[in-house]
Every structure is written in structure tokens, then in C-alpha cells.
Amino acid sequence: MKASFGRKTTYLRLSVTRKCDLFCRYCRDSSCSFAKDELTLSELLHLARCAVQAGIDTVRVTGGEPLLREGCIDFLKELRPLVKRLGLTTNGTHLAAHASALAATGINSVNVSLDTLDRKRFFKWTGRDLLPQVLEGIDEALRYRLPLKLNCVLLDDLTAAETEELLRYAASRAVPLRFIELMPLAANDGSSGPTGKMLRQQLTSLGYSLRPLDAALFGKGPARYYEAKKGESASCIGLIEALSDNFCSRCDRLRLDCRGRLYGCLYHRQYTDLRELLLQGAEDEEIVACIKKVSATKPQGHDLAAAPAPFSLAEVGG
Image (cartoon, rainbow, N blue to C red; front, side, top):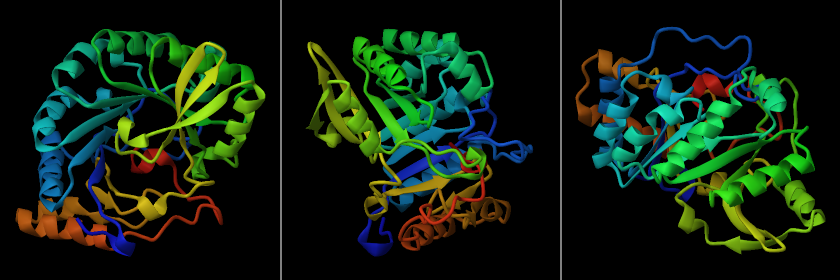
């Protein structure tokens, strides 16, 4: 469907819950509440069908932690035939228990958050001692041949040694490792992290050579991909540089949270409440038109370089 400033919208990030069993410092803050105002999965599926009618062909299901939402696997099964590509983003803590069922849905992509392989650091950054469960989930997902990517947020105290350890881990499992620039949000409490350029410089100083790869081979996301090679070891890495290499001009997505709020941009507070349309008994045509309007009025870009967004990522869906 058409979007503002010559763009086209084909991608929907859909949060099914705000619940999460981690307390990642870049996602949630102490003011984040989890009121019981989530739409039912049937209602969210209804809105997803309308989004597909509007022109969406790719959906990524997120949270919170989506696997904490009862019925999530069945929801994915119903959603899969509606779209060309279906993805899931998870913190991995419940992945082991659901890997087999996830594989049976025919899902195209599973992104797992993994910021460190150090158990103490994991506890420091997430508030929970659950790293062994995450690593078990990754291995179980690979056993069932789920198409995985690993996501690592670039935090200010991520060391070169940890970066190399993550690279070796990802290479040993032949899984792409994506590094994501830390976005300035309320939950971050003034924290900052290295840019993609700084990471590339760090890798070069560690003896890695970087060879660009075709991003189209890895899905529809905004990451730029490289082969990071050192000696006989080679890793596939991705860089998501929303601050230092702003990709708003090619943004193709909308975001729907579990309360039915549709955002044209993750980093703007403006949203359209689709829940109200459902409560009013609106026809699908009206909902489709509303989704198209949100796409057509997407902001030109975020202004996070000027000031942090005054909300946490958990409020609008991870």
C-alpha cells in the first residue's frame, strides 16, 4: 500500500502481549505497566486480515515475549497462510518448549535476542538468570531447523572479548548475528551504545575483514549484512543502524500493539486506535481504509537524534 514520501508499506510488526519474563534495561522501565487490556487473539487475527487486505504481505509477531501469550502457536498457524512471510521475535526463554510446534507452523524467520554469553552480564542486563534457558532454546530451535537470527543490542559496556565470543558462537551454529544500535528511549535512562561504524572499527582492529553481502538473502529487514572473516573463521553479521545510518526513507512497516493501537512509526507517540473500530462494529472496509490512511500519513522520519522518545519500547511492542 502507498505510504508518504514515495514509500510503500508491506510489513506489519504485531505485538500479541506486553508480558515478558525479562526486564531488559533498554526495553522496560519501572513505570511500564501491564494492564489487562490486550485484545483477544481472534481480534488481533481479524486486524491482521484487514492489514493484509490493505497491502501487508509480511508480519512479524512480537511482544513482550510472544510465547508467554497462551494460544500464540495456534495464532501463528492461522496467520501463516495469510502472508508471504511470517516471523517471530522472542527472548528465547521459552523457545525450547515450543521449537517443535513452531517448526510445524511453517514460520519463515525466528529472531532471538542474545546480548551476551556471560551469565552474570545477562543477569545484570535483564534482571533474570535465564541465559541457560535461552541457549537451550537456540539449540533446540536449530535441531528442528527453524530459520534463526540472533539479535544483539549494542550496549555501552559490551566488550571486544564479548563481541568475539558472540561471533564465534554464531559462526559455530551458522546463524546470522545482528547488532542493533541502542535507541534513546525512556527505559534507557541516558545510556548510550556504540554505533555501527564503531563496531566495524572494533572488528577491524580485532583482525576481521568485512565483505558486504546481499541483504535480500536475509529477509526484508533494514539490516546491512557482512561476512566477518578472521583466519579460517567466518561469521555472518548484520548491522541495524537506525541512528547513524537512518533508514526512514526506505521504511516499509507499520506497528500494531496488543491493545489495537496502530503506529506509523515506532518512535512517534501518534497512533490510531483500531480497538475503537472493533468495539463500534466497523466493517472490514472501514478498518482497511483506516490502515491505509495510517500508512499514507507515516512521518518522514524519527527525530531521536534531537531528543529521546519519552516512552519505553515495552509500551508499544518490542
